[in-house]
Amino acid sequence: MKLQTNLLAAEEASRIYGRRGGRRLLHAILPTGAYDWLRGFRLRFNASDLGRRWHSFEASMLALTARSGVLSGLHYTLFSREFDREHRAVLAARARHVADVYAGRGNLYMLRRNVHRIEKGLIMKPARPLFALAMIEETVRAFGDCLASAHRDQQDIVSLQWADQILQEYFGRVTDHPIVARARTAYDAVIAREAQRLTDDRSRLPFKREMPAGLPTIEAMEAMALHRRSVRWFDQRPVPREVIDRAVDVAGYSPTACNRQPFRFEVFDTPEAVARVGAIPKGTPGWLHQIPCFIVIVGKFEAFRFERDRHIPYIDGCLAAMSLIYALEAQGVSSCCVNFPDYADTERRMAETLGLPAWERAVMCLALGYPDDNERVPYSQKLPVETLRRYNHFATTD
Image (tube, rainbow, N blue to C red; front, side, top):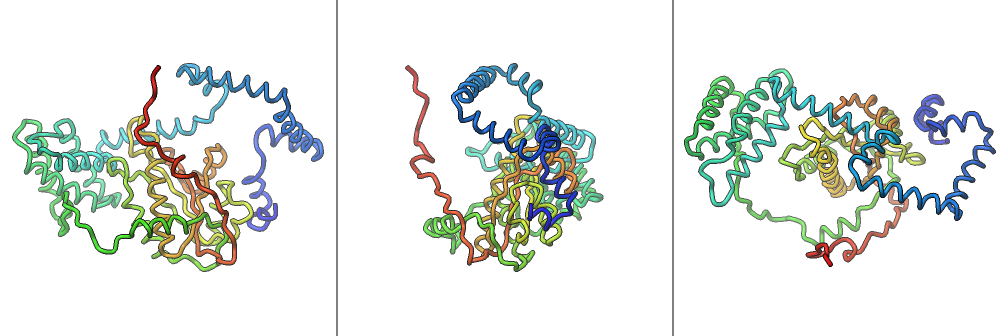
């Protein structure tokens, strides 16, 4: 409890780190010795023959339930509410997405997705004389809606300039078709109103890559991977914001599903802010007090309409996180990933502390700072290549 009392008021420490549910009740009503005996009994039971038989039975029941979608759904309706928060986030995101798209507010994520799909059509081989008929009118409408909402919401004008150039290229490439003609008329009307705001001296069209000088070799990448470790002890130099921003800029180039980038980085770089936010994930007791900077990666579920895409904010956010980590390491700033388990209390506190709407969720956290070179880091043996990969493996049939 030393960390808690050092950083937080007693009532705040109890709220953040205290036991909850049945454990909280037992801890409150039982003497310390009795509570410790119960905890020891549970551990002894798990290691006993009876405990092993019980857990074997439990595993068999879970395996049976897992064979059926209906039984699995009943299990998580009757016996566990662990997926409730994701259910609510996905439904709230769907409501937000549909309202944005069809109520005229504009959904920049949908626009970016559609523009990227059109962009891929422009590079297809052989070139298609007609494509994207199912989405072009929707895309132009979203383009106009996002431009209109950009006046009040300060939406990303660079994305709209990119969309404009891709649409120009599309209309100049495809052959005549009634759907294309309607979309072109709508596009021309938008441009007549907004041309001045879309002025851009940079080409954002598909291009041929050239190999630049100075790219890291595989040997340099291997050295970086071997050097990077989860660092938990930092010196107390503050990390300049320009260093963080440069790393975030690199992370922004990470691949994402249809270029939607459904995440953002919430950065906290004062001792008070780090102490407040860094205590929430429960993975920082004992070293939180000396973390100079703390980042929460937030997944934005409103980028998606369908449940099938519910994992993408986690995937894309973590792809960007790895790029961020390497970009920080390249500037001498080390980091440690802080897991964010899906506990109801931690999720609620993070949402309340950061002011997250129902359609946004914390994906993971990152502690970072200049490393204290006098302290050690865990060796953390990694799996060998032979375990991590298989070539051309398929299921076998008898």
